[in-house]
Image 1 (cartoon, rainbow, N blue to C red):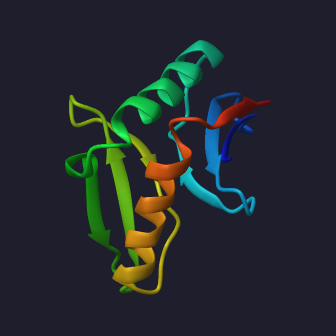
Image 2 (tube, rainbow, N blue to C red):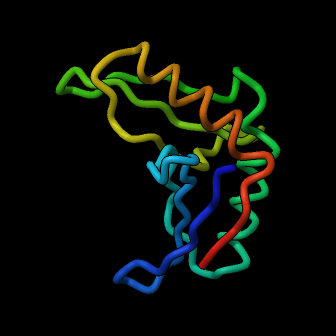
Amino acid sequence: MGKFVISTRANGEFQFNLKADNYQVILTSEGYTTRANCENGIESVRKNSQSDSNYDRKKSTNGKHYFNLKAANSQVIGTSEMYESSTSMETGIASVKKNAPSATVEG
């Protein structure tokens, strides 16, 4: 089972990482000014992670693939790591879909 890990950035903002069973980070949030807002972001990931249309697949300027998970209002709620191939990126999306709904929260 995956887990959301909440941490505090150097600037005092809160963020979360969604980690898979193998402890690899599969999704990272933006910075939030309060812990409560960060926890709301986690709930938004749980809610929005199951719909494939909420994943915005992208390619960076260096040719690596990544995705953003968006909420219903089109706001980005999480960004993936960089992947070497689109196939690896799709595996990352499948991992978010699998892990997010039942992931525990730590931190």
